[in-house]
Amino acid sequence: MVPEVKMLGRLPWLAPDELDVNQRDFYNRTIERFSAKRRATPLTDDEGRLNGPYNPMLYSLAIGDALQRLGMALRFDGKLPRLVFEGIVLMVAVKRQASYEWYAHAPVAVREGLPQEAIDQIRTGDFTSLVEIMGEALFELVTGAINHLAPSDEVYSAVQAEYGVVGIQEAIHTVAHYNEIALMMATFAIPLPAGVADTLTGPIDGERRDISASHDRQG
Image (tube, helix red, strand yellow):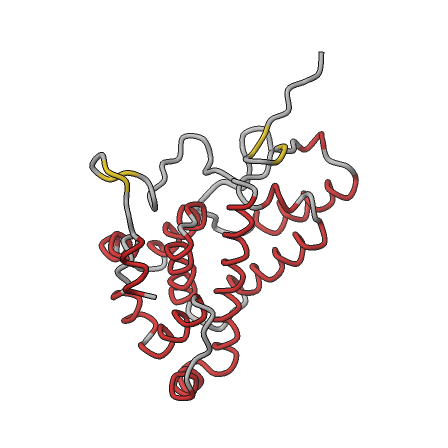
């Protein structure tokens, strides 16, 4: 009898004992990289299968490793304040309706000091609180980056004065990185973990959120 293949979206959800030597090395490095970090969400299920974007990475190890290293550099070695970084990720999550990114990063933003009231506003596309956190210039640069637009000279100069060239680099690469993760998750139809409610695009009071109009208003 052929054993049932457990799926995570469109891909087999690989258990540790199903990995080849190279995949197992990648798996161990993934666990090691994140074990020391204060994760708000579990990295694996009860049987050790990698959750979220990490299972697809097992199918393209070089790309997966590069994505992880970039993500770690942006999250833990960057010069932007952590709350600013998390705010950028939440903007991308809302714009792309990336429920897993929201699930993984909204709790971290709260832990970093973003009030729950602001989280509730952001998920509807109201980014007022993020303008206050980032400053108008950085917010405009990030909004433009999400929409594939270059900043004006005035915006560029203002962000450079506040955060330096390194801050500009981190902001645009954070947008690009989490855009890429969102696209990967959508392409492979990776769901939220079992039993986790979709607090970004799921129903409120029996009705499904429609934030497309807010997206248009906020860019």
